[in-house]
Amino acid sequence: MRISRQNKILELIENYEIETQDKLVSMLRDFGYEVTQATISRDIKELQLIKILSSSGKYKYAVSTSDEGPLSGRFSNIYRETVKSTAYSGNIVLLKTLSGCANAAAEALDSFGLPHVIGSVAGDNTIMFVVDDPENSPAVVQLLNDMLKK
Image (cartoon, rainbow, N blue to C red; front, side):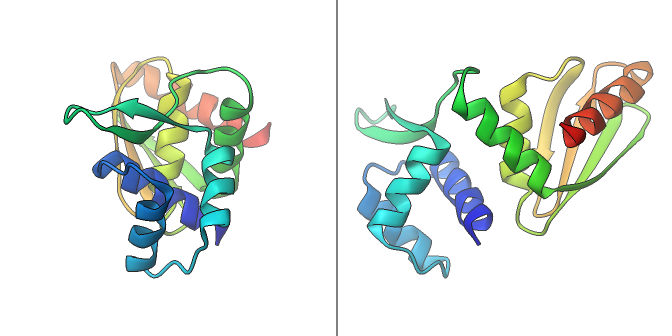
């Protein structure tokens, strides 16, 4: 449940300008998550969310862009706990995840800056990566599989 909830938090802060924990609690409840402010506070700390100035001039929650410390460790855990399989065809690499976890896993992978990956798209349980050259797809899949073993 925690991973699903944290995945939803990442999705919500990506798609909406969420200024307060109360607003986040309210939105999560709208999506069927029975949460308390204390739970959200712990999730924000675990995900190491930060507040940034939005285009509207208000502060909103966002994912830190730092590649150091616990954030990378946390995203590594999300990746390992949610990804079920990897495959490729041509310059497309696909990852299958637990249902509802593709966004969190994709966010984790995007934060690592994978070599040769020029973009990604996440659905509910599938992530698609576009690789710069079909010859690099096996290396990307190998890297992703190695990350699952760590």
